[in-house]
Length: 386
Image 1: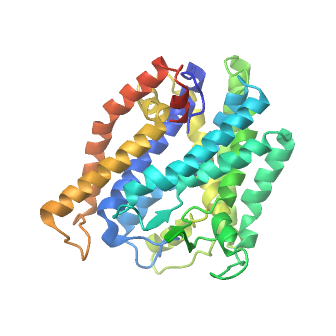
Image 2: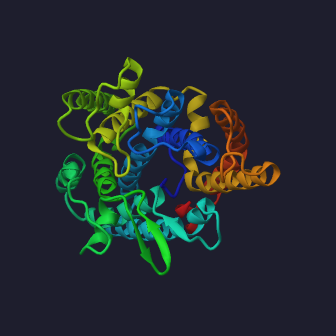
């Protein structure tokens, strides 16, 4: 989430815009998860059975978590340019702890069918919070050490895929939290580690590591060098993905000939998100780097300030859209009842896109007003957490 206590300067509007794009795309994925639960997709997606339109709709959201986590690391570095290292570490620790609590309370309540919830999903807010807690300690190391640790985790964590523990095994719960998507019982509640945190920790470290690219960013020569670096980084990551994926030797489950060119392409692009594989992170972060460079070049475009509105108040938008979707689902279920087994769902994917467009327009004004309030009242300390 955005770590600046003050309104970003113009040079940082591209960061807010990219974060805003993530929120806009995320909304589409959550509308799908709310009204298309009768057609769930696995992880990675089964290329032989998935409806192609559903697959590519879901594929759009692939950039969301990786780009957001990387930007969180970058924003932490920017925050540190106006505060001491101790202050930055303290803020990251408190903000991370806040997000961990926020995930298992307000966010989980929005996803649960019962109150109090019988199941808690440790999802993206949990992963960001845990990663920020780790980054709070890591900032006391040199940048070289931080980047090296980030690369080691992101590039090497798939070597650990063969370690699969079962309930009752020693270290099962810590391993489920770190790297194995699983469920465990605690305090009479089922906890599901949807977002094992290890790869996300590596990514937030790397996001922090590119922070110096944004130092003295108003100087034309510095800006040009940063844009070149972002483009080279983006193209390099995407090229690395294509080569490594084609070789089929490391980084994710192998792709295969699925019988038709379309389904084979789906197999090639069907990547593991929970936890995110190396091959999942390469193209998504690469695309994020290219978009960040493009958004900085397009400062004069009307699109950039509009997207930046969503990026300036991401937590507010996140919570508001979750509860709005929950309310709409309960209304639909009450009016028409379960039409897809035990759930209510849309008949066609077009309905998902139509509702998405309506909600995006409806959520813009309250998000803008909150962002403006946050800008005016930067003297209110708790607003930094939203």
